[in-house]
Amino acid sequence: MLQQRIPATVITGFLGAGKTTLIRNLLMKADGERLALIINEFGDVGVDASLAKECGASSCDADSIIELANGCICCTVADDFMPSMEALLNQSPPPDRIIIETSGLALPQPLVQAFQWPSIRTRAMLDGVVTVVDGPALAMGQVASDMSALEAQRQLDPELDHDTPINELFHDQLSAANILVMAKTDLMTKEDKAKVRDKLGRLMAQDTPVIETDASNAPMGAIFGLGLEDEAFARSAHSLHDHHHHDHDDDDHDDHDDHHHDHGHDAFKTVIMTLPPLGDSVDIVHAIRDLAGPGGMLRAKGFLAVQGKVAPLVIQAVGSRVDHYYAQTDMLGDSQDPDMAAGLGRLVVIGYADMDVSGLAERVGGQIT
Image 1 (tube, rainbow, N blue to C red):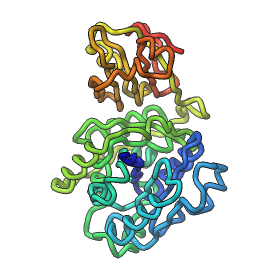
Image 2: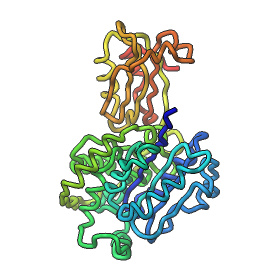
Image 3: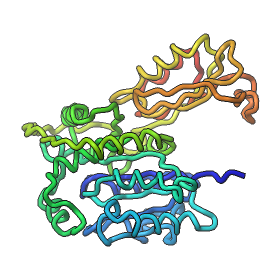
Image 4: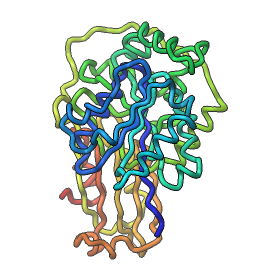
């Protein structure tokens, strides 16, 4: 029997960007999944073995947290990362998912490429690379809120290239990402968030979704289950051979007293929709793509019936990128779910609380369950 590969998510971002807060939120929303962590925050109090107890999450125990403080994990892949991964993969039972937090100044590309090593790739799958950016800092025209601490971290780590400009390191972290997380948005105005989105769009060579999070909100369903291993490999390989120097705009920061109202645990929502057999696949793909964007859909996934087709249409959307293909088997007819077994499609949509999912349902003839 073919062994199922364990999904792994790489989370990168500068010191103070919000990586630890993001991971804590993900642990709290694990919903029965057993998570394992590899933490590599050099020179900083990152996530340690007390994290699971502190946040009250039963999803991650002390034996499933490995801290590495011997320098940048991306520079010591063979010595640090490989043994850590093997230790987690050899656990009985193994974890359901692995989260790897890189050092704040690490380039994730060598780590991403390590997932292609036979000893890892046969047992683990790179689900995606998530880069966390400090929203308020970027709105003020800098990559971190405490630039002096960032520079001190760089000088303390002997594995790092001290001649590489900070802005180039930042761009390399962005270019490797399948998803960007704009953190600390509860401290930002709507104008600031729009400014940062525009800045990130100009820095990115490829379409990359941006998710807004704050201290208490992180949509687990939009960050996990990406299945973007091949894209992550391609992005990291391209970045390793194509380094650019990018300077951030010295935009003046406008102070505003009005903050965005999306606070608490209602900033994101998950909606399940059933759909009758579709006439074709074109309309649904365009409708899902139109729902993406600021304040809209983050992820969509499902199996849809199409008239004249035996196999269902598989939908995997990340932001405005909608991948779709026909399955090789009749996954609807074989489903245990009575609606799907009856030939109805099922679409799960994850996004912001204010997204117009009712408009999507009306447009494609779906019914929200």
